Structure formats: structure tokens, C-alpha cells
Length: 217
Image 1 (tube, rainbow, N blue to C red):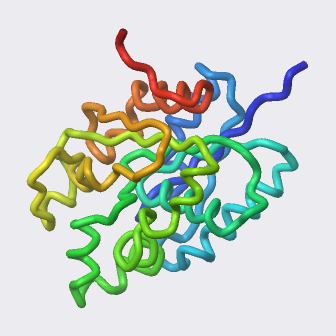
Image 2 (spheres, rainbow, N blue to C red; image 1 turned 90 degrees about the vertical axis):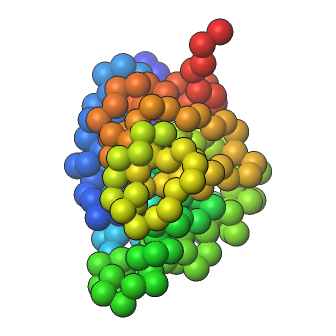
């Protein structure tokens, strides 16, 4: 019997592992994956502390291959884990609405004194002070990474950022275009809408299976 491939689902900022439940269920039912939910303190924990916790979580599963699906900051965290751990298990990564080249919305919040307590440590370290585009180039050379961006502008980010481009309400499409990734897809979803979209989950599952997203012929 062929063992199930494992996928770890990593939530985003101000969230919890259960926020990825619908994606987990879809990957299990439609693609036959064994999907696990990983939770981390997105505000209290530092980026490297959370990346180390993700690495330990994966190694505790006693498997030899693992894929990761990360939403928003979760995608940044997945890449940080791979950047920090040269012995990380092989597997593909899908980032959903992840700000990989910086974030105008995060920049605004980081500059506000009142937001210091709520923005925490991971988001500034992985998105504002240095973005994945500054430290993940070698990860892109070694891994198959797919990124899904949304273009339905509904979300908190629109209240604080001046988007003059397609965006998902929190992250601009250009902010997801990390150089060196395997595939990039723009879908008609908002930032939070990605978490409940069966189409997004299906595209993520396709990339994990084939190394590319589905496209009309």
C-alpha cells in the first residue's frame, strides 16, 4: 500500500490552524493527502522561533517528504523554515496571498505607534524589515514553489494601503511575485476568501501533485 503524502497547512497573521480546516479537508477528500494543521503564535513569536517550531512539528511526523500550504504570513513562514534549515524534508510549497516582496499594508501598520502591540514580531521581520525576496532566493532554486494571488479587493488592507494595482484587499498582486518561483496564478478571490474557496484548494492540490497550477487549454 502506497503511504499517503503529507501536507502541512500553515495559517496566517491573527489566525489559528483551524482557519485552514476547509483547505485541509479538500486536500484530503479530493487529492488523497494526509493534511495536518499547524498553529503558531503569529503575534507573540518571532519569525525564526515560529519557523523552528514548524520545522520541529514536521520532523515529529516521522516522514520523509512533506508539502506545505501557507496562507499569507504562513507562506512567508514556510519559506523562512526552508531558508533556515538546510536539512528540511523535500516537498513542494504553495503560498496563498503571501506578501513575499513586502507589503504596503504591513508597512503602514508597522509605522503606527498604536499598532506595535498588535502587529507583533513575525510580520515585521518577514515582511517589513526584510521580505522573502531578500532571503529566499536559494529556496526558490532548490524547491518547487507555487503562489496564488487574489484580485478581489475586499479586506482590511484597503483601508490603510493605497493599492494602484490588482489586490486581494490586503496584499497587492505584485507583492506576491517572488522571483524564481515555479508557478504563479491570479484568481478571483479576496485575501480571506482563499480560505473557503474550493477552487483555490484544488489549485493548491494540483500544484502539490504536479508542480504546476491548472489552466484552461
